[in-house]
Image (cartoon, rainbow, N blue to C red):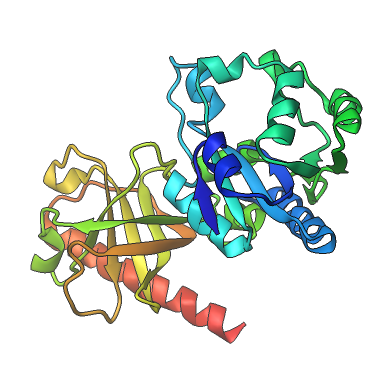
Amino acid sequence: MKIINDFETFYKENDYQTAITIGNFDGIHKGHKKLISTVKKYAKERNLKSLVITFSPHPLEVIRKDIPFYYIFSKEEKAIEMEKEGIDYLFNIPFDEEFSKISPEKFIDILVDKLKCKILVVGEDYCFGKDRMGNFDMLKRISKNKGIEVIKIEKIQNNYERISSTRIREALKSKDIEMVNELLDKKYYIFGEVVKGNQLGRTIGFPTANVITSKNKLLPPDGVYITMVSYKNNIYKSITNIAKNPTVNNRIRTVETNLFDFSGNLYGEKIFIYFYKWLRDVKKFDNIQILKQQIEEDVLYAKEYFDNLEDN
């Protein structure tokens, strides 16, 4: 997969005609995967290149600057997931106020002239152009005159409920990790670099990897979670604490993971933390010894959880 960040680069470097799908693709959930798989199907059948267009930053960051926006998957994580999907090109359109004012007609011209679009795959409620004035009917009418075939994908549902990034955010904020994973069709994860923390864990027999995440990554609420860590193609069962640790008066929200049966130095390394289940809320303990006892119980519970998964 090649990542491109501007129209001119693609236009100058490629003579390929393309099958394209467009969206924010935050989370790359089941609905997004249907769009992507359809693009790949048509690209293969018509000898085209598959191209996914997304936006950076997210349009809401530009349109509603007063409200912070957090991503289910960071820009780096989104690229990782798109690579897994096996597309030819990921195009991060630089979204700014000027781009937000492009008319629907002008946007279609760009797809034809700059990206050589022949197939365009969109969701049934797709809107585009200035003030989202362009809808599917307009898209189909304009595209027909431009030589683009437009494919509409119906909504994907989960137990009669539409799958959306908004629904996934709601589930994540309510600590329903199992639902998040079901809607994503994969495990929610954090990808980040391990840095030095306060090193309290190692003093009580539970060393942790302190992970730095993207600043606009949507994290689960504070709490302790059952997780697995992937590092250099090895998998380690783990528990992960997300919190401003109240027992030691830590004022900075951190992501700290205790890897079971691991010994080694992870500083400076990047790891994946896959989330399976919320375990408990954060507590303030009277002393470190009580904290240690609670962690021992957390680890035991997590190990039993994974044992049950393997048995089933």
